[in-house]
Image 1 (cartoon, rainbow, N blue to C red):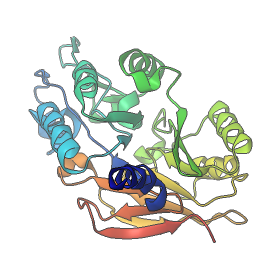
Image 2: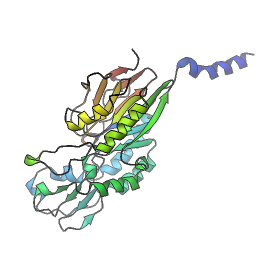
Image 3: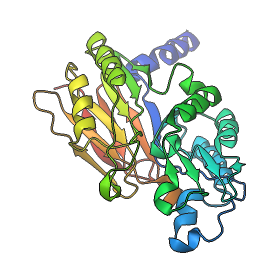
Image 4: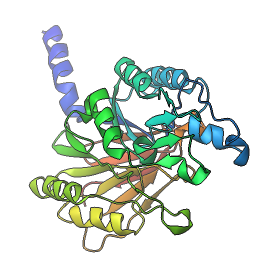
Length: 316
């Protein structure tokens, strides 16, 4: 009889303890470089630091693979989301005008071997060709290849099998989380003065609005590259998610340095928090753990497993 009671308690314990949280690792700005030598004689002398920024650091692909192994053993995430700038460029041309293999094939291999699933968003570096045969540094960066780059990403990684913006769900008890991965790295030609104006496509806004309107009770987690900071692209996103009924998170990258969690002003909408996680390529400790519970989201301090920076309550 005692044995039967023990078995019954063991079966009921998960119900008594509540649903187990889903653990999500957030990364941004991997900037993985090419393992190949890129012939760029003379050009780099014009801009100190350009080599690391444009080509990555030798061995960084192997380092990222080792990081995933460590994270799997230490943090035990259910999956990871990455806010863009996965690579330094989708393709390279050397100073001799010849193509140089980029890091996409290696990233494909690393992703397949990861101990947990990786969901990627595209950033501006992921949609660019670096042409080191260009006449000036200002012409090196070329986003006219964005369509080709997106096609290459779709072929290479399973998460993009239905396109470069997509969504998936995770349930914790009675709460359904909807992860929406956006593609907002396109800026096209630089404006006068070298400024970039990021755009958010009309078809993506239409798709996002449909996602929200069909699932207004879902807790929304947006994963994107360029933070929502008041520009036209940000206004488009906020307009598209206006139909939600629950608090939501935005997981962003691009700016590299900020490490903060702050609300976004969205009049007439439930609370919306934006999470900046510093660039992974600047330090391997730049990762953040999220715990999704039935009634809250715990957002950890960067690089820690148990220290909480912010808790987002999902119920009044």
